[in-house]
Length: 298
Ligand code: PLP
Image (cartoon, rainbow, N blue to C red; front, side, top):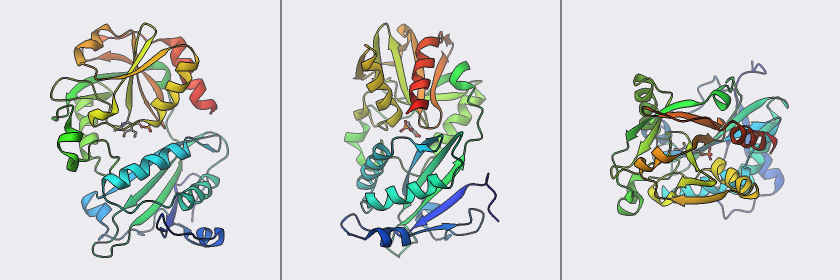
């Protein structure tokens, strides 16, 4: 039995990007399954090796946020892992169906997953989990304390060692989750990854945005970090609001001059950072409110 609050799961029989299925064929290629049923093979390389990719989108009042941006990033991650390019039309249709299974009010999320499939099959596995959000969202107002943690790689890791897949959104998030646990052990809410050569990077599940006066800076994505869809949406809004926006190699030491900072991501939206290590940071209430209002109103 599927209750309205349970996650809903939709499996895709993936088409190749070069296929030209009809609308009926696309509709027939997406089937809903019981999220509690054992529908994923234990031999799936996504489960046994974390060999796959994913995206998480926010859904606000029944509106999925940034579908095209997330699909573009899914395609980019697929290319980095030598996975077959996703058939965008099929994913779009499956996402629409998954969104329609959610309540049309409140906030929720879609997690879309593409794995290398069952070992030896050569066929990728693909699914979407749709769920209503359980969070109370207070961190968007009250903020989070973060601690800097060494990621162990230099800023040019993506160029030097592309096989480390820095900047791809892979299913291998055990390290990211370990970093959040370490941050909590240190009395903070979240971690800010730092390159081994001392540059601020990103959170384990979010992008960093920093305000220095009327200049807004985010670490440049050639430093082996994920290009954030929320950061990009905020940059477009901030530019329209008259701020200067920049992508930079951002030394951790420069954060001491920051006037405000945020961790931003698709489901969290904009959480103001109230401390980086032992240094407190004031919440920019007006800008935080404006950012979240824009993200909620998209
Ligand atoms: N960086 C990492 C490592 C992430 O996992 C995420 C999102 O999960 C982000 C940044 C933010 O990306 P987006 O704004 O597209 O959700």
